[in-house]
Length: 359
Image 1 (cartoon, one colour):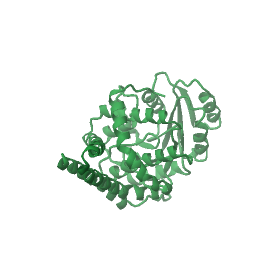
Image 2 (tube, rainbow, N blue to C red; image 1 turned 135 degrees about the vertical axis):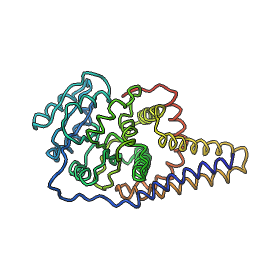
Image 3 (spheres, rainbow, N blue to C red; image 1 turned 45 degrees about the horizontal axis):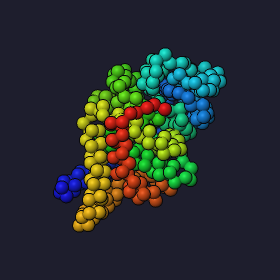
Image 4 (cartoon, rainbow, N blue to C red; image 1 turned 90 degrees about the horizontal axis):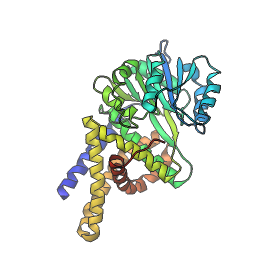
């Protein structure tokens, strides 16, 4: 069993080192003036977002002329979301709001994109804030690199509360792995809060979003697209979309459980392999930790496994956090690493076998 544990930890370390190497080799993107840029549609699906959508609208207003179309899909909101969007759209001819006929995020996406005519579609969420010039950077990158799907960075806004800061550090680890894997030509994850794709990619993948799962429109589109198109990550320090951290442990757990639940429908071999590897590493850490309580001779193996994983993770996470202007989260990497195995096992089991609900 000890040999098996070392093999699994070793395979995990190889994966992280490949991601870290790809991240370090990639030079940051700098937009240059271009005479011809592709047309861009911004698509936002909204459901009961009256508290959070004003921040998105403010961040969008300063760069809204960079988009040829802006489409808001109102997914049966029962609060003031529709009113706020109606008032915003009244200021611009190319901003449109419509009420969805069907239900759910994936249906809202389909209905919204059907109303667009641009070659590029940029998707974000109603609880996000876009950095300045974000849309211009996306158009420049897509013009320069001609990829079919562009994954963007996302980070969590947080207060000084420890719980929110731990969330931000844990979330950063997901985005770092997302970035490194994509740059290493094995994209396995993405985030719909900052995702751009061509119309051709959407047309080919829109019926492969797996409607049986509540979430995952972004990842299922990615998995279908990687079979036939170039996928990349936008490494630019000022191209990280910001979203909000969960304010309670329950809302955090429900979100992560929802994310975990879609993994039961994954068919992409690379994603399944990495997800299985991450779960096995967590299970081995917890299993050996409990066993060491009764067999003290196992403490050496337990500590060695933890140190190998933690130090390998830091080779990716520390440079990523510095680049994404989240240096203050670096001291939290150790407590996150201690909590992470228990959290992974709990959310994986709850997501795969428990009931999942939409907010």
